[in-house]
Every structure is written in structure tokens, then in C-alpha cells.
Length: 210
Image 1 (cartoon, rainbow, N blue to C red):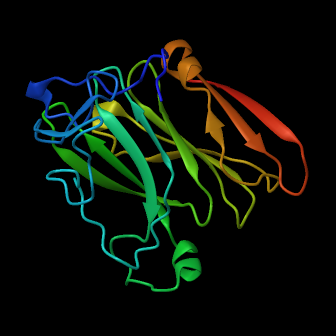
Image 2 (image 1 turned 45 degrees about the vertical axis):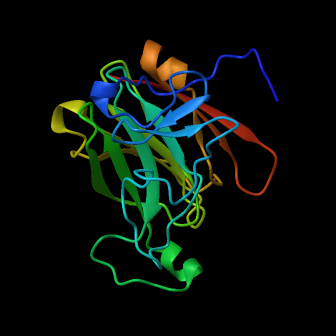
């Protein structure tokens, strides 16, 4: 299959140890900058060297398919959710998700990955992560148990450690809120697309970012 559409990847240079492709997916490099895949001839598998950047044990209530964003400095931010670091492992996924929290992973410009646990529950929902023009991060998520939308932020100046809850809505929302990323990164406005619980109504929230 071929396409003329542009392929988006985080900016990658060998000196940055960035996991990416710089030729629209024809060749791929691991986190150490070593080529590990070539389209049509050499395929990437789970056993390919350097494709795993962080080990997460079993029975941690890990939710797949969350969100990621790249800031203006080329730092990759990945949002996941799992049991808090201090919690015991839980083989029942549904039970584990009742205490799952948002976890922020980021890869700095030297290629080193970091993990920061937030204090915020996510339960069985999925949240979105975005960055403003100053590379502060914002997360939005609809709690599927309480039906409340939570907006949280952490500043680039703190190394994204000063997590603060900015807003909690009334109990009317479902889950899987989405951020208008170009609006946030360029216009410093946090625009959120979020479905209401128990119906077909979609709300759009628009926040000024200070």
C-alpha cells in the first residue's frame, strides 16, 4: 500500500537517541539510534533490540491505547494509567482499574525515559494529553465511575512534577475526552471534546490557558 500523505513522527536525529523513522516509515531506529527495521525486508518484533524502553510488570491494571504528544523541544510525552507504584499487584483487571492512576512517561532530548506517577484516578476511562506553547502539559479525562471530567496540568519548569487538578465537572460525562492539539500548542486555548453520559450529546469546552 502506498500513500502520498505526509507521515508524522517525532523529530529524530542520531544524537538524540530518538525511537522513530525519518523517512516516512521505510527504516526504523530504536531508542539507541540503531536501525532495527526496513520496510519490506526486515521487520520489527517484540524481540527487536531496544524496542522496550520501560518495564511494567504483569497485573498492574495497565490500560492500552491512551495518548501521546511531542512538545516543541522534541520531547515525547506518553500518558498511561496503571496501579500506583505502592499498590500490590492485582490479577483481576476490573478491580485493578478502580484504583488506577495517570502515569506520565517522557523521553528527554538525550534519549532518557522518565516515569512520573500522578495522584489522579482514571479508573476505566482513557485520557488525552496535550502541550501548550510553553510545553506545559495538560490531561483531560472523563471518569467512567463518577462521570466527572477532570482537567489536570503540570509545568515544564518543574520537570512536569507539580501535578495540579484545575477543574472537576459535575457528574454528566462519560469517558475518552479529546483535546484540540493545534489550538492548545499554538493558540494557548484548551478546547475539549467530551461525550455526555447516557445519551448522544457531545460537549465542547473551551478554556483560556494562562
